Image 1: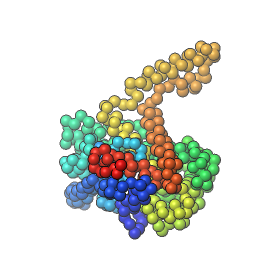
Image 2: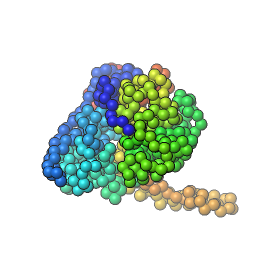
Image 3: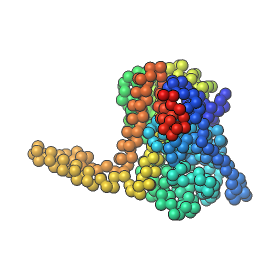
Image 4: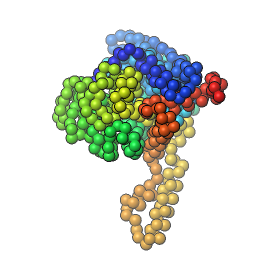
Length: 478
């Protein structure tokens, strides 16, 4: 798996160029576009922590792109390559993503420059809590204003530590659980959050394949089942996307690319087994049921139906965009396709489902968790048993009218009330479907827009612009 590629423009500049392209397509006032692009705030903190080797000073950032809605929401990344430009770029993408998905959050992002693998659990806990304290004491961690979530290098474990640190500072805050999302379920989390981004990718692909006229653009035929898929990155996002797609939609995951190389099997890889091997050995080398290739870059360029880059940003860049042979690119990672690569791929006619839509599943379910924390009640608690009673009444009525008993499984399906996980997945599916409906509608009303990314950005910047018009911060020109 390649490291982030150095192009002629930075990550943030690339995101801004995508906004510029959408601004022209939307006919938006350039002054309003400038207001939309500029970030609201960014803080850098440095703090010392004693570890085994002595005292180390850690550097972290929290960037807020937009506060047109509050709280500002974004993932918190722990990685050695974290920097301010990346953090600001990702916060901007989060603003556009939330706007597209109709989630009432502003965009934010956090990062800590650290390699988590080099520290013990106790050291990581101390480092994470200290970082949380730095943010909270400056007003950059709060249920009403700034709410982090898991990202690369973090998980529900780190979110639990952050929430506990916040509670120690603000024990009187009755909404303290809502200061972060992605928490363990028994610590105020919500079922389905860990898998949400990967599940959202599955829902996005399912929706795309419901529209034959869209498939024609990519040269794909028939249904999702049997499509040959390459996945780059088997972290939380890539693993869940590959697992759900292979097990439920019967796609063939013919290749998985990781840091130490790639695995190939034209008959389809067992994603669960690969993940287990990766966890045990630290890499994909040595997995018995596949061919191993040391050069993961070459596998990224292999012919396939669907390519899902779900690792770092800038993996598809100006250097390799001409070699990509996938019919459809599904951008599972934020910024996986650079602006320059996007221009090349669009000219080549390769269809891309953009990150701003495809990986909105994480923030969508974070929104559900946040609202659940504020309501202090799990979803479905008031109506589940009522729905079961009503379903039982329907089933009994049908049996009495027909004089026949229902098969056991059918009756169970009719009677069963929705669990909280059912409701979460239903809401996620609806969000992904409605966002794609908006994208398609935008392209139909604006024939000059030929690609999904530009359409998605047009929707997002128009929504942000309307917020600024309503607040009197920009002139609508009407």
